Picture (cartoon, one colour):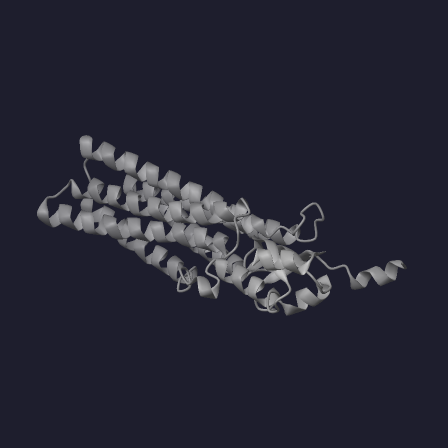
Length: 313
């Protein structure tokens, strides 16, 4: 066979991963906003001698670093989209970025809990008015960041609409700024209670509550992204549609089906089919709907007596 004839049967394995995703630009905007606020707070903290401002500025610096990791994942996936060392492109870097971000969230929650318990046991003086001002400014900045990185979770639990179609890297960045916003909001509530009711213990108490909530978000993201990294079976709704489309006659039977995610919104599938009078792999492939996000389909077909096919049903 001439080499030029092979192009008909060959295809790229980039699957659109070389394109810049909307989440990359949005995350960069948030990094600029967070970084600017970080610099302002650190400079103000040094000039005014305010430890509250300085501490919050350094806290924002840690999250700017985490968001930078998310951007790195986007850039890495794009730049390695054509790297043939990756069997199905570099799309899973997105899930890896989300997984790493979830671990950082968990560490952030542990730090919140540790510091809060320490302050419950050993209270420290709080400059309430200044701390409230910092928390309000932080809430405004983080609220804007949450709006920029907002993630549509409407389909999270709707398997019929392919619930796992997520930019997990973007979701990790979103949860980071959401955790910051929650921390600022809880701090405002606690500081107001301390100022007007004298409940100084509220500050560390709400810190523990915040740590529990952030831990919950982190575990959910870890569960989802680890499933992708470990090639967990794709959504049942997609598997059922594949199976039903192939088994539309009384002769063909799917005996093995492996569906897994290779990037945001895209899947690879391997299917084994047994039939008494089998069609070609191409004919079976034509039966599969085109709107399932399948970018790499491998089909093997086996012929066997009709009675064996019937026993498999």
